[in-house]
Image (cartoon, rainbow, N blue to C red; front, side, top):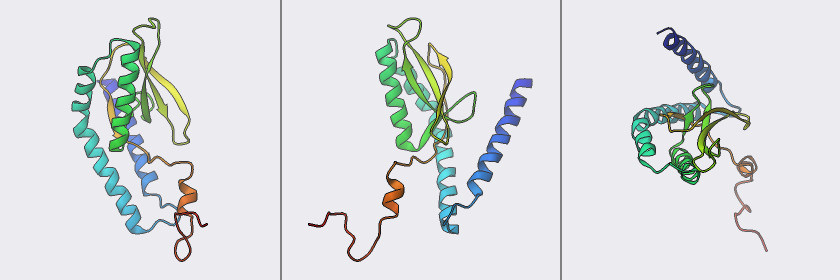
Length: 166
């Protein structure tokens, strides 16, 4: 009971910090942009809570006895979540995480590892396990491609084209 209470306090603090971060206006962001960003987040939170049970069931049903199967299943799981704008919530840090199939004491069977992915892009191994555990899901931070900021600053209007000029 005491541990549940501590986790609840920690989660409440994390949610409050996350909400404050979300409500902080971004440079050049209009009211409608903020409203859209928040609506999208609420929608992805709902998707995460509705999708969690079925996603974990699908993982358990999939082959994951060998290292290669664990690696393949991890790649599939991360891709599925990415397609939905979701991520695994790290049990230790509360940050988004990815699951990886890794070699462990028994290289043929392997195991799983969660790596927390922080806002600055850094990663940290947080949890290792031999058998699948239920994974908690959360909305993922938006992915920014390395050239996205340059493309968004490209001039628009007369004379601009996606085709190179000859």
